[in-house]
Length: 150
Image (cartoon, rainbow, N blue to C red; front, top):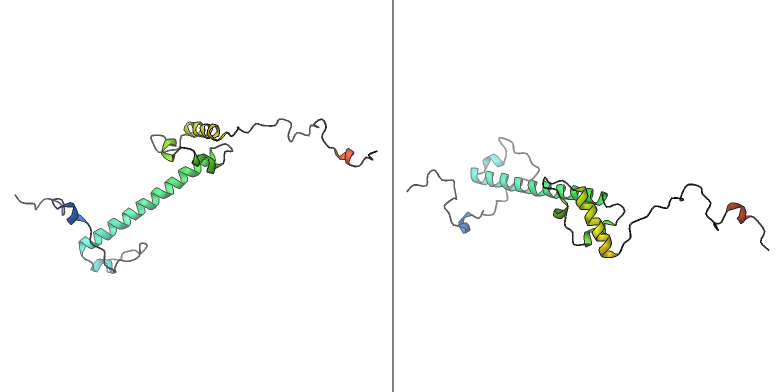
């Protein structure tokens, strides 16, 4: 039976499919291949291998960027909880994502509440009188600072 229609390497053993090291003629990742450039002089398989490796590196870089943006969004939704404390709880980023890959605000709020309970952190309570100019009983006043005592 002939393998002429099969893709290259399909019927090979896994050990034989491993890529040999790329020659030192590989240009830097940001270099743009010109039609008459160094890359055009390479064999077709080596050019494809280089392009594939560059594409894989780009996918990894973009994946890391997406993860960093998702983490930043989660940390913005913590409501005053220290992000270092939050990530030390048993929560992972994958636990906080909706099926479409976006950060689920309800899951973040629940996880933040669980982290507060786990570490014994009370939620911040608003102080209604703070900043409204209401004189609290027994508080020092400017007038009291300049009166003679005794």
